[in-house]
Image 1 (cartoon, helix red, strand yellow):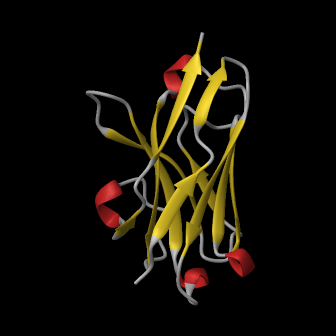
Image 2 (spheres, one colour):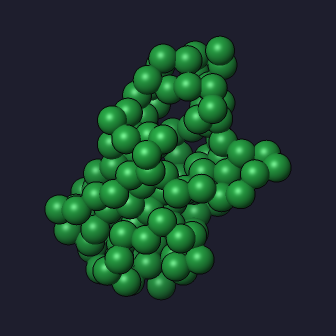
Length: 124
């Protein structure tokens, strides 16, 4: 099993940047695909980005492509989400999730392990 803890959320003005971190426990973090999802009040949990076990492959939602970058450092058991050019519609609770599968799935039900989430608020 792996436990995930997100950090780095906060309040930022539109056009600003934030970097989220997802720190994982366990010695086999490199065996997990990791995804970022977000959920705004009253809305479904949406896919943001995913990264393969080695970090060589990534996938992004169209809404964040070109603005967000997912990366990982397996030596530090950490996955990052660099968010630039933030918009008010990016406001949500952001979750990281992990799974031992190989697919960079955009379906949140495919991920077995979840963090508690970190709030990102973008003011206009």
